[in-house]
Image (cartoon, rainbow, N blue to C red; front, side, top):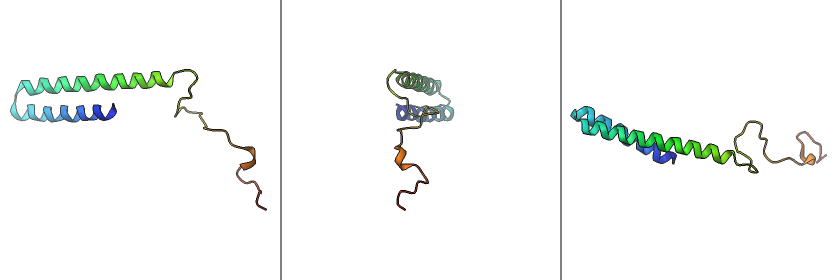
Length: 83
């Protein structure tokens, strides 16, 4: 969804440039509509991502303190296994 939001932002910017060059209010309203649609899509995406991370029973990735899978005690750094 982020790609669609970025595309809407680019289209909105293009409509803004056209509106400023032509002095037409119709293009400006088109810019506003496209930008509001992109903002709503970004908000929905952010809320869906937050809700998916809060599902119990599933670890959230990228959470501070998440160290990943547990290591074996045999393979600690600095061990002299090969000597």
